[in-house]
Length: 300
Ligand code: ADP
Ligand code: MG
Image (cartoon, rainbow, N blue to C red; front, side, top):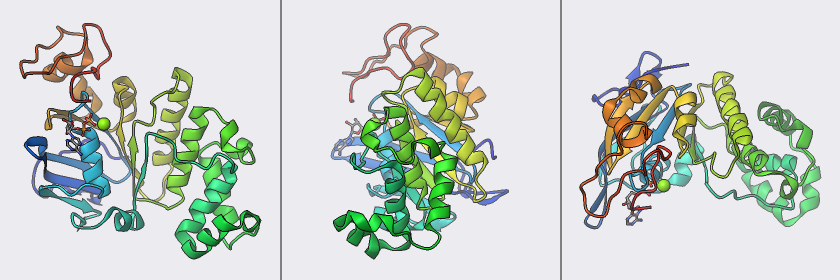
C-alpha cells in the first residue's frame, strides 16, 4: 500500500515504486467560457486508493472523464504507468489498463452473475467470440481455456460465489455494484475509476462495498489502484490513502485523509462542522448548516 500523493510537482508521478498507475498534470478543461478544471494535478500511486471529493459542479466527473479518455483536456497531460496517454482514446486506454464503472448500472438483467463475468472475460481474451455468444446464448455454456479459473477467482474476490447463478435482476443494488466492479476487474486493469459507487446504498451496503474496495487493492498482486468519486465524504476519508478536494475547478487540498480532515478551508467548505461557508460567487451557495459535506450547491 502506498500513502501520500503529491501531484503538484513536475515528475511527481515517478515515486519510489516506479511511475504512478495514473498521473494527471496541469489539467485544464474549458466548456465555452466556463473553466471546469483549472490546472489540476493528481497522482494515483500503484496499489493505492485515491478519493476525489468536492461540491456539485466542482469538476469531479470532468476529471474522471479526462482520466478515462472520454474528455480531451485543453491543457495538461495524463500518464498511465509513466506513458503519456493524453491523446489516447478511451477505448485504447481501456485496453491498456484503465477501467471504469458508471453511476447507472449497465447490466443485462436476464443474465446471471457468472454469465456477466464470462462475457467480460471473453471480451478481453476473445472479443470475436463474445459477439457471437451474444447472438447465441447457448454458447455461454461452452467454456474457453482459463476462463473457469479467472471467473471463479473474480467471484471469490468480490464475495459473489454464493450468488453466481442468480440473475442480476433478482439482486439488491449493493450486490449489483459488486457485479459491476467484478466485471470491470475481468479486464485486469491497472486503475479502476469509480463514479459514485456508493450512491443509493444503505449504510450496510455501503460499508460492505467499501470493505471490498480495500480488500481488492490490498490483495492485488499487480498494484491495482482505485480512484473513487463519491458524495459520501466520510466513507471516502475512511477508505482512501490520499484525498484530492476540488472546488470550482481548482484543487484546493490534497493529502492523507488526516491532512485533508484537519485542513481548515476544507473543514469550512465541506465538513459541515464549522460555520457554513459564505460563497460570494453569483449563483453559488454553501452546504446548509449541519448538512452532509458534499452540499447540493449550484451547478449540479
Ligand atoms: P462534479 O462532477 O464535481 O459535480 P462536473 O465535472 O460535472 O462537476 O462539472 C464541472 C462544471 O463543468 C460544472 O459547472 C458543469 O456545469 C460544467 N460542465 C460539465 N460538463 C459540461 C459539458 N459537457 N458542457 C458544458 N459544461 C459542462
Ligand atoms: Mg459529477
